[in-house]
Image (cartoon, rainbow over all chains, first blue to last red; front, top):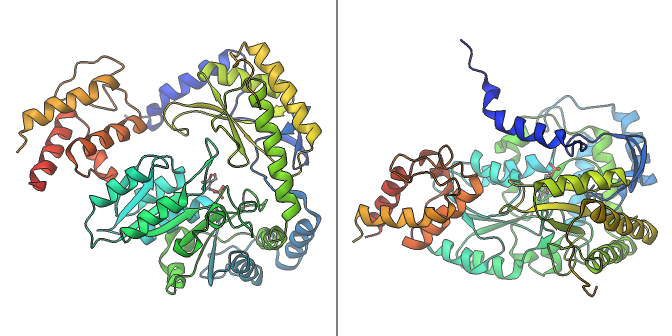
Length: 407
Length: 83
Ligand SMILES: Cc1ncc(COP(=O)(O)O)c(C=O)c1O
C-alpha cells in the first residue's frame, strides 16, 4: 500500500475549492498575457492597472537596463550552467557585485540567485550550533526557513517591540554568539522598523545585526540603500540582505557587508554554492539598474507622492489601512475575513486593478489584506482611477467603510 | 520552587482562551492535531509561557512538543534548571 503523501493537504485543497466554487477568479492563478509597462498588463483580455508588483522604481522596462541585458545575452549566452564557485562567475557577475559595493559603500558583496536564497544562506550560515538567532515575529518566510536550516537556537520577539527584544536577549547566555535579524520594511502591513532602538539593544547585548532591505532598497535614505540608511544606523548593521526582484526590477538576491572575513562565506554558504548562478543577462540588467538607482532622486520623490495619494485617497474613502500614515510604498487595506477579501480582490480584477491578496499564515495574527504596492511610474490619473475602482468594488461587495475620515 | 502540577495548571489557563475548538484539555491533547492551532498561535502561546516563567523555549524545540503534557514537562524542566 502506498500512502498518498499529498493527502496531508486535503483540507487546504477543500478550502481552495470552496473559494473557487463561489465563482470568483483564483487569486493565486493570475496569468499576465501581455505586459504593457511596469504599471499595466493584459489579464484575461482586460487592460489592468498593476498595483501589486513591488516594481517600486519601474526599472523592468528601463531602456538602459534592457540594452545591457540584450548585450550580455548576445555576448555571454543564455545561462552559465554552473555554480558561482565553479564555472558560473562571469565578468557580468563580478560587475554586478561591483555595482552593489558602490551602491552600498561596502567592501564586500555576494550575489545569490534569489533573495529567498540570500536570506536562507546568510541566516543559516552565520548562526550555527550553540549560537542564537533572534528574529522579529513578522519575519519573511525566507528568514524563518534560514532559521530552520541552521543548527542555532531560535528566539522570536514581538513585532517591532524593542522592550520584548531586550527581555528575550537578557535571557540568553552572555558569551553565546547572537544574530538579530530585522527588516527595514515589513511587506505585509507595509510598516517600517524602529531600527535605532532595535539595533542599539542588539548591540548592547553583543549581537551581530542583519537587516533585510528587500522593500526598502531604491527609495529610503540619501543613497536609496534602505530604511537602515534613512534612520542612520548603517555603522551598527553588520549585514544587509536584499533582492533584485523589487526596485531593481529583475531577479536575484544579495548580501553586502564590511566584515573582513566576509569572502569565506562563498565557500560555506550552501544556497550560494550548490545552485547555478544567475544568467549573465539578468546580472547585467541588475548592475545597470542598481547604478541608475543611485541617483534616482526624482523617481524617489515621485514614488512617495504617488504613495501618499493612494494612501490618503483610500483613507478618505473610508477604507481601513494597516498604517495610519504611509510608511513605505506598500499600502495594505485591512479586510474583515477571507470571503470578503476574495470577493473584493476578484471584483477589483474584473474592474481592471491587480492587487495582492494576503491571508494567514503569510500575514500576522489572522489578518486579511488587499496589499497595494506603488510604482514611481504610476501617474496621478492611474492612482485616481484605482481609487474610483476601489470605491466601486467596495459598493458591489458591500464592504463596510468608515464614515468620513480626513485624508 | 514550582511543582509540575502548578505549571500544568497554569499552562491550561494560558491555552484556554486559544482553545477555539473547545476540545478537552488533557495531558495527551495535541496542539496542531486536536486543537487545530496554527503555527503562529503556537508561537505566541510559547512566548506567553516564556514570559510567565522567565525562561527561554527556542522555536527549534517546538517540533518535539506536540502535547500539553510534553510542554508541561519541558517548561517544568526549564524552571527547575533556572533554580
Ligand atoms: C522581506 C523579503 N525578503 C526576501 C524576499 C525574497 O526575495 P526574492 O523574491 O528575491 O526571493 C522577499 C520577497 O518575497 C521579501 O519580501
